[in-house]
Image 1 (cartoon, rainbow, N blue to C red):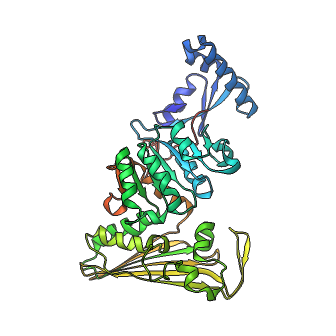
Image 2 (cartoon, rainbow, N blue to C red):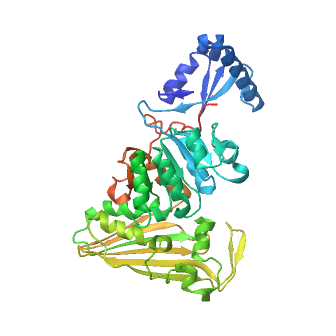
Image 3 (cartoon, one colour):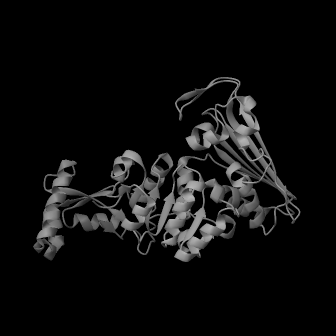
Length: 431
């Protein structure tokens, strides 16, 4: 059931017909539902569907004597909501699907592999309520749901794998958003081809995340209070436990310390070689985007990758294995450049072992005075919502590949109940 009035007003309306509101659910007498159905009851197929729904609700404990539980979708009048899907329903993708669902967007399907295909999303995502089915490919998704507004790419695989998916989606007019750090800044090796596909389909593609909120737009905001800027430093401290297995394999977690740069910088000439920069550096792209946001051009980039070698054994909870002392247990990456507007930019990412470290971003702007802003702790909730907050901007953006420096600052996503911020939020679509 969808409501476009405040929860208090809905409670009053339900009580008038002998029903009640209980958080995100309404308990409605079955005779009231049938009265609301009116002439639809004369349709035998519709009537059989109602009988089947009653049976399904009874099997799941959603019937209390003569009343049936109905999920309520609270929407503010005129509030934007989108038809969405999530590719990759691992830890990150599941969180995104659940929050999209809770905020009132229609998560109509997921895409995954293996034995997840064919299952309902609510079987895989705790707290999700809806009928969306997990499909086996982006091609199947487009065929089943050609009118999607936007798809979130959340699979823990490199951009080289997801780019063809993004091209296929955008060429069919479906917008795409991703948390992949490789998509955060311009790269001649992939942007033109994807940009052409997106423009041909009339859709947009954008890489977002904490970099978007903290590494760019927090700097944009804070810089307004500093005169004669000389240096901007952005530091991201990340505990090992919050990263995906794929990223940790890239930094060489558990490799012998004497593997040196090969474990960190990849095979393309070591960490100071900027060829293939997007695949080697997490922070170089955002540093260049910060320069561009200020209307500046970044000069030559200096990169360093230093492994953090543990002096004690570390049990990695997420991977359920021991990382021995004397092996790589983290990494410190630093990217620095000057600009043609007379200020320098330094970006630091420090991936640290242990669960006691707090994930946070620190912005420091040095000029006539020095301003320091800390943004944290960074949780999966922060990352999920940083993506979701960008959806309206991406849907409204001109077709093509979009970048944070060219976009307005992201805004809070109130969701469906802007008229009552403390009201129960949507937990899913009606069954």
